[in-house]
Length: 164
Image 1 (tube, rainbow, N blue to C red):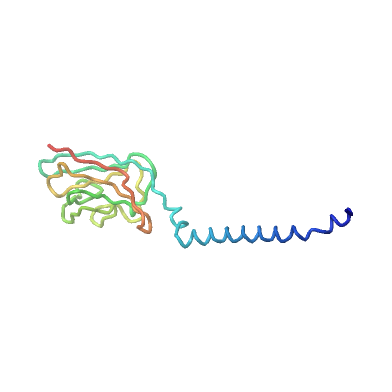
Image 2 (image 1 turned 90 degrees about the horizontal axis):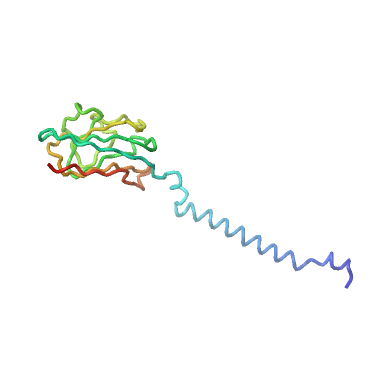
């Protein structure tokens, strides 16, 4: 075998490398296109916040109030939060503002009658009051977060009012 021929005869290497490169490019393109077609890329920025809410029950002789306080964790946009209850309630940022005129089993934190302003960030120490519907003993409450596109939601905290 001639040494010079060994260095110049590489015809079998080029087709193999070409096939490997084409397969690799095809796999990468399929992965990128598949991510967007299946909408896997859009959900990456919408992770559930980590936050803890505390609840306090005030038995006011038939006009009960539940205080919901953001205790620890991530600061969350008020537009993304709602209070779900097993009984209809009205919410407000002050206890005196609860009037019971607009009660519902699911109230947004930015309710027009006394909730937080749109765009407000809810952080540790921020408080919301739920009441205005008389007796809330035994009622279940959940603070629910919803993603910006409303495709995902998660319960951040739960509470059951005591039975008296």
